[in-house]
Length: 500
Image 1 (cartoon, rainbow, N blue to C red):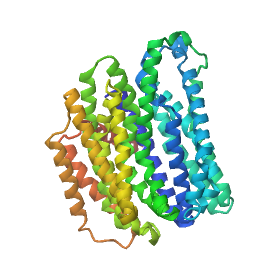
Image 2 (tube, one colour):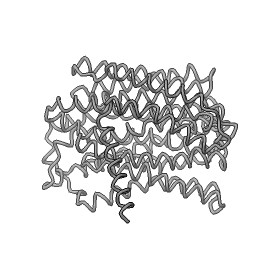
Image 3 (cartoon, rainbow, N blue to C red):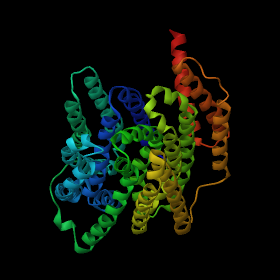
Image 4 (cartoon, rainbow, N blue to C red):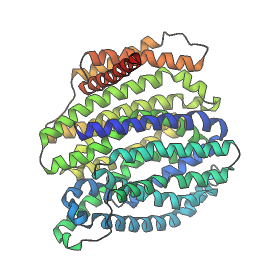
């Protein structure tokens, strides 16, 4: 897979490190020192700003990936694309700021009783929306220049380090909560700044416009792609974020805090998929432009194999350790046990169908992709409205699980029908069964008195029971190659040590 494999490995490495730090932040420290309402506030602010931020890009993330290959020209500073991108971002922020001030009275009135803390800090949505818009745009530009792993490093790893620093400053009473939440907001701007510095160091920033390049036909194409990109982008982020707003609406900010913490454990499954999607999207767009469908189908097949292998591995480690996870958290978080299960299963489905969605999005069927995404957000909202009042936060997780299964099936069928490509076979069924068997066998391990030792032992057993037969059976050639490299490095280190 070339650049995809290299960047995905690097991106996954940063994502895993970030996930470990995120686990320390969200799973260990925050539940112990913040109230559930305070945890809910941080998540609700980020969720709402992320939704506004996607709208504020005005669909230009889609334009960047799909149409930038036509702008690409190093000698001519990519024909003024960055100027166009930032101009659109500025317009998008103005629109979102106006929308915020129009909707602010409703946000205040609908939350004043159940979530007064949110009302107190609702003003932070403005800087967070600004940061969100320009992060999404600058990061998409950075990705299309094949620097994707750096974007993952600053967002998935460095940002969580900064968040950990803020949490520790609060814990040691250097910050009160007001100072913490402002620091937390400013920290989200650091990835934007660092990506800009990277682009500047590589001489990939130019604010010079190139209006001659934009003929009427091409402008109409940009507007069409951007228009449908707004729908895809909004729906894509909303399906991951809007449930927090609905939990807050139907329950309260404390329930949002419990749900968000439980939700985090499920999102760990998406780490490999996020890295691969960020990187492969740019490559697939270039291949579609060049009509290299054999290469795209190969990417589809290999990506699906590896993502299913990794997502099942992460799932069984999470669910196999569910009792340990619950012991890490205060008792109030016990209501999130089945949220973890359902969200984790939903994201296994999402991981496996991820590349099919990318292929549709960057092909000539991008309009149909937008319709599918719009259907997905309507589906998840309707399911939440039906399930949340009766089943609480478990109902919200059930809504995501059902919606993700339906959407995954629709995307896979679409690619099969339109491109005559589907990478699934009996091996994928065996992967699922092997994961279930590993989880079942590990359940017979008696609970150790030491929580840490039990976590390490149980995770190791699960990993060996699942990964070893998968690799030996040749179900992931890339995984075998990586394992051989690691063993080779280990052997070299042993030889060096023995020679000393």
